Image (cartoon, rainbow, N blue to C red; front, side, top):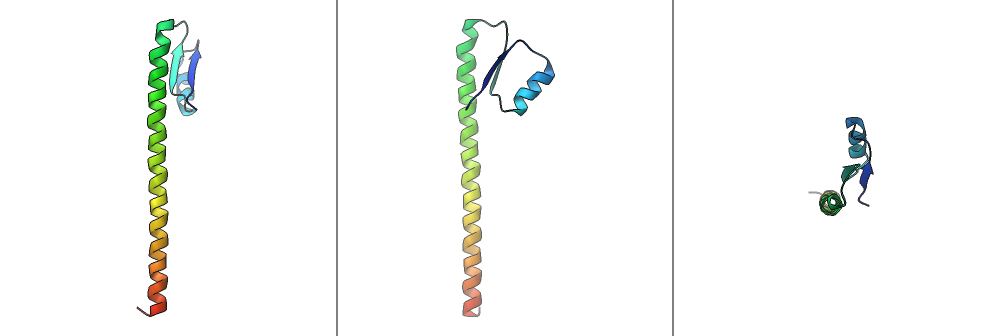
Amino acid sequence: MPVLLMTGYADPSYIEGACAHGVVGYLVKPFREADLLPTIEIAMARFGELRAREQQVSDAQDAIETDKLVLRARQVLMETRGN
């Protein structure tokens, strides 16, 4: 779930904490209503990019596991055939 944090704190430690917890947008009060839509759109876009990267990593991990299984099956086959 994309999280957009709206707060009255601009201290770097708060911002670092927000980043560490996966916040995709950070607005410091007071902000204008006109600031909301672009901030939300950018946060949603970044979240979409993050999800796409996570899927790529998952797909790559699955491919690696499949390759390991195929390699092991080849080894077993070669051992049983005496090659």
